[in-house]
Amino acid sequence: MAVVLAIAAMPTISVKARQELVKAIRERYAASSSSDKHRILDELVALTGYHRKHAIRVLRSTTSESVPKPRPPRSRVYDEAVREALVVLWEASDRICGKRLKAVMPILLPALENHGHVKLDEDVRRRLLTVSAATIDRLLTSRRQASQRSQRKTPPRATRSVPLRTSTDSRQPEPGFLEIDLVAHGGDSAEGRFAQTLVLTDIASRWTECVALLVREATLVVGALDRLRAAMPFPLRGIDGSNGTEPINEAVLAYCDTHGIVCTRSRPHHKNDPAGVEPKRGSVVRRLVGHGRLEGLRAVEALARLYAASRLFVNFFQPSFKLAEKTRVGARVSKRYHAPETPCTRLLASPSIDERMKERLRAVLATLDPLRLLDEIRIVQQHLAGLAKGEVLHGLPDRDADLDRFLRSLATAWKER
Image (cartoon, rainbow, N blue to C red; front, side, top):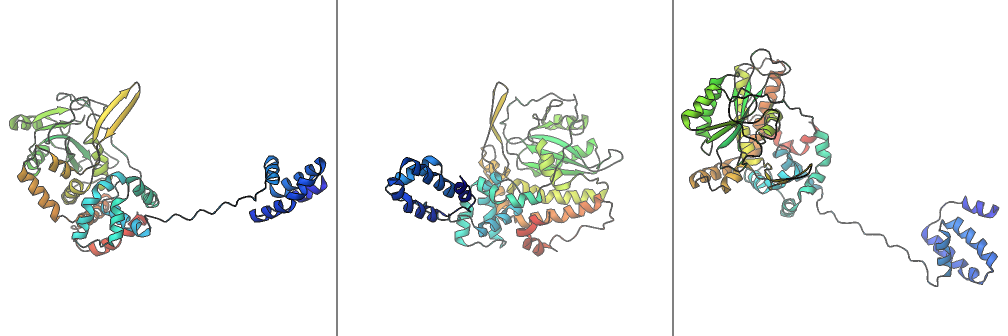
């Protein structure tokens, strides 16, 4: 026993040393008596760490123990060059998720190349366009974790001013039926007069419009609707309001009756009813503007400039998911979504949009520079952040002043935010 304990205290030996040890004592083990075999096994188990049954099989075997061959390292398909190019595209798309980024890359990458912002090696470009959505999320994990920020949402109010439209109603209308809501920019206080954002989202295409309002006032909402009717790529056929009294009121109802616009509202405390516009409060307005208090003409002018750029960026370069099917089995609800597409792509595929409007959309898309739009958004965001802090700012900065610096920082912007 003393010998066994002494051997057990020895350091672990290598695979090659174990093989040589087994080869040296195999013949002696075969010729030994039963008691000697017990002693040899005790020493071998203590020295090599083998299980006793495995040690018996090894000593009885007539062939040497095979050495596991080291597995050759796998070659990396998506190397650092692909990762860095992917970071630039992720930043240029305003940090959308992998599934949405995968869907927009065939549109976004040519747009960046046509304007001279990106020049990729042909092999890197080919691999970048073949990367899956799951691999995109994996490659961007470290960048996304470094830039994550919490968001909060403002609950809607309830009203009974117009007919109800529930989440079980038809969700596949033609373009022109919009969900509408107001987002307040009052900061931590609802007192006084402060800016508002009127948000409208088309149910069919997810086309989103944002309009800055000086205050919450019915005539301003009507004026915004009148301007949007001429600016949107489809006729305004109907509006569905949230549970607040702000977007849907007597003035809006009168305007809708005059122009033959259908007007409905969602149920109180059912956020799944305005499923199109409700997420845009956070993903568009709050993401771009934040939660600070904005008031006065200067803030509204800055918001208007911000929404002029974000309108093109969101509708032409931001894919979104759209619910295809929802099934309920007991308490379990299963949802299936269409592949993410941009609102522009959905309008181009819609038979309800005439060919002249589709040609106009294609012409606009061909001229848009997504990085210039994103740079414009960042410039106005910094200006709005200063206004929200109470800083005295005189006029908006030049939109092209820091474009070169912005373009150079795309690959490392995730470290700074």
